[in-house]
Amino acid sequence: MTDTTPDQLTENIRALERQQRQLRRDLRQARKAARFYEDQLNHTRQIITRRGYVSSR
Image (cartoon, rainbow, N blue to C red; front, side):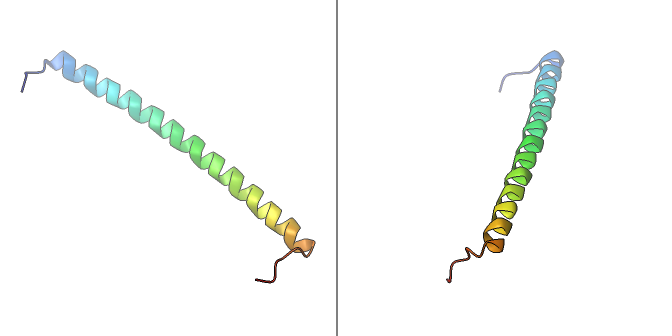
């Protein structure tokens, strides 16, 4: 295994921290999108139920 200098380790840590921040942002966006589509789905279900389009399964 090659020796890593303290500067390289510091840079690696910073890169991982940047990556972690980006992943957290992506996760927040994905959760927001999931909530949006869940709301859309529930709204559509309500309309279908109100109009009596429920299938007899």
